[in-house]
Image 1 (cartoon, rainbow, N blue to C red):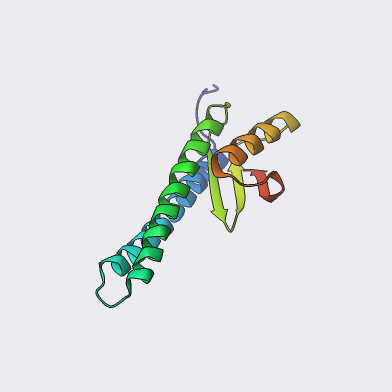
Image 2 (cartoon, rainbow, N blue to C red; image 1 turned 30 degrees about the horizontal axis):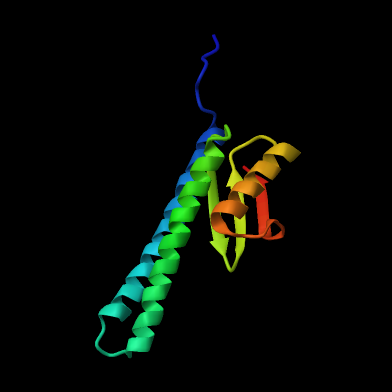
Length: 128
């Protein structure tokens, strides 16, 4: 008897990878925001340092929002899951797919370029 719709062990591992990676990314951003907020609230740093901390808070918030939008747009292209990691104007995009064709890669690059402002040569796309 064959049961349809069950998840295989590799599907479960893949799902866990995407969830765990998203959680790690969100934890990192939360810790960074908390650190900068402590600087803003501190009486021990200068106004210039506070202004830099506020700018960093705004930058992190902008990146987080852009990642969320880009991930949702990529999922709307019929990918089951995706996670985007950004560092120093580079992006790693990991999609849940058995394979990627040239059109899909181009769609992902276009979304990441547009939403995150990262040049296509600085975007690494892989599947899991």
